[in-house]
Image (tube, rainbow, N blue to C red; front, side):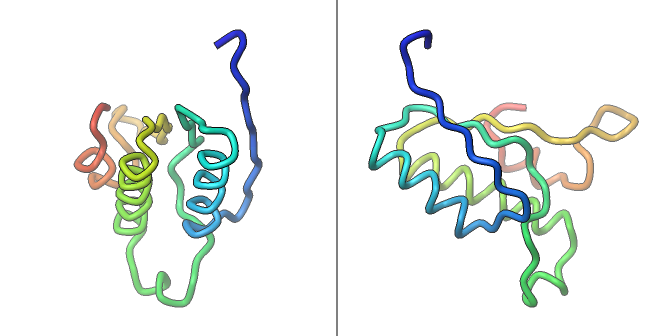
Amino acid sequence: MEKGLFFHEKMPGYSLEKLTALYKKFKLKHNIGFAIFDYLKEPESSNADKNRKEYQILGDVTTKLKDLAGILDIPFLTAVQLNRDHDIADSDRIARYADVI
């Protein structure tokens, strides 16, 4: 890791499309071997998302990152918020779709 390249992209108000394009660009241009996404939260809303619950949207983000990890053949590391009981906050789907918690 000492000799490796590191890339950082601040994306307030991110969308899944922007996120996917960014990771694909870094894989193509720099052959990244690992990705970190801090942290799982609701992306910028579209009109279609307004009728969906937060846990559904967070599950979609988790699934998208997992699918993208498979497509790019790299592991992803991400963080989530915990509630006061130290369980994953706002989405059981994150726990269901993640490989390691």
